Length: 170
Length: 203
Image (cartoon, rainbow over all chains, first blue to last red):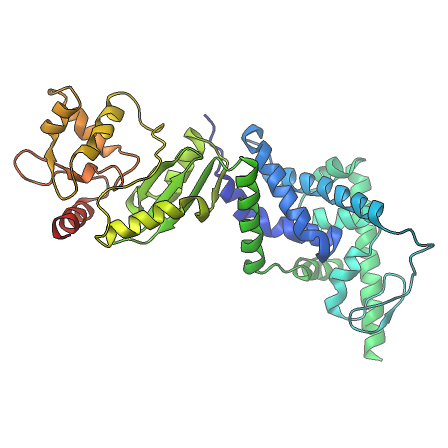
């Protein structure tokens, strides 16, 4: 007999954060599916989870794997194109250069355009609040490498963010 | 802008509305039900005896709980005794909620619901299985129920069985009263017992 919480409590305590992580890693279109598959898979094995496990790290680990599955499936479905254009028209209508931002509201979009590892490190540390040792356990590699990936991601976001500010203030 | 500002903005860059999460929750409950991993579904209903927690397994209704029993504590106990795979999932309790609604409106005299009696065992279970023999609007003494259950001397044990009834209202322990005509105790409190007995007397 363990003191394990009802799964409902797990969903209400962590559902919001897992959704944010899924949106950051996959973008809005696939985030709902990733969230659903994450919690369904978690519920399947929940009775076997050790009572002292870190539930949030466990959920983010599952979400990470589901996001990879979804990305791979999308890649298989996609028609190959020569190269993804670097310059893109943003939702705000402005032309953004490499990783650039039109407006503050595009921060979410800028995150989804980070290189995968930086994006994952930023999402798991800054959005889910996991320490770098946990982030490293999910991504593989050392805690230092996870910290560097997150720092690189943040630096990149800050550069494009400030760049966008300066441009929009001109 | 420093890293702290950016980190704070990041947390706000992916807002989730409660509506989106409740839609996802509903979708999860439906998928869990389909996969057969929704071990316990629950919901609450408002009633003349306060908020009632209703919980059901695949087998049937396993728990009805009064607010004074503390719904959160009841769910925690279900997680330990039955399974932690518990979700708020009103769908499975539709028939239960409907029959209880009819009962509280005075339009239903007996419940026609599958029950999961695994939370009770032995003599207590025997006692509970005899309670539906006390008809709607009638009462029986603890001693009479002891007799019904085949142990005329086990009057006190009948009291314990009623006090630990996992399915109050549906399994009518409120119809068991003291031999001197006084109402006796009730797990839902004396007011709830009085409310149920007068509801049945009036209908």
